[in-house]
Image (tube, helix red, strand yellow):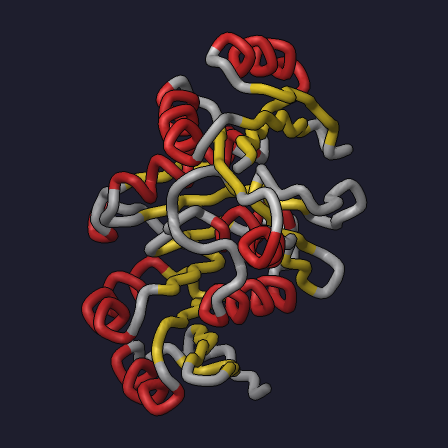
Length: 275
């Protein structure tokens, strides 16, 4: 196994020294071309890898262990491949070893949280953001996970992000990712219930599933600005009309489906547009 640590340029020398102090071999560092560096090292066995990664993470470093060769390495490289959306926004893990120097609208994700753009429910809403973000919007990301949807909105020109999740780990991951992408000044992440959030929002994205959408429908309607739009996903195509019914009087502007998953965009009844 190989230890990979993602670090800003200013911290690279310290990370190299720390790995050597902890007994790692073959320590080397390389630039990703984006201000992020990758520091790699080897250890004698997987048990040592696990202990070393845990220790580095406890010290606040973005550290992972990856396979060295074979099908496991192939699977790892595919999983960490950057996701590029219409050539305008890209999502990747901070520790990816794929080239990222020329990726447009790069969003880097650290440890924790859910969502890296790979799952259809996330990808469909990123596609909606690509189509609809005009610039300067106030965005609410409900069930933020890693914060990927809100961070993509900011990369596309949105002006402010409020991210909420019932899981403290997700909120912490979103805060770390906002700092990682240098948008922490315009990002607030919280476990506060929607009833305590002050609207309105020009854009709301909620990848939270049918049950949660039904439960939160009154708050989603309350928080949406009169000329804003709501993007929802996490449900099946056969559940789409039921979700839309609970969100009335918001009107469906469009919808997408990929396999067993569906997403829809709704707005106030004064704005109607079919896809």
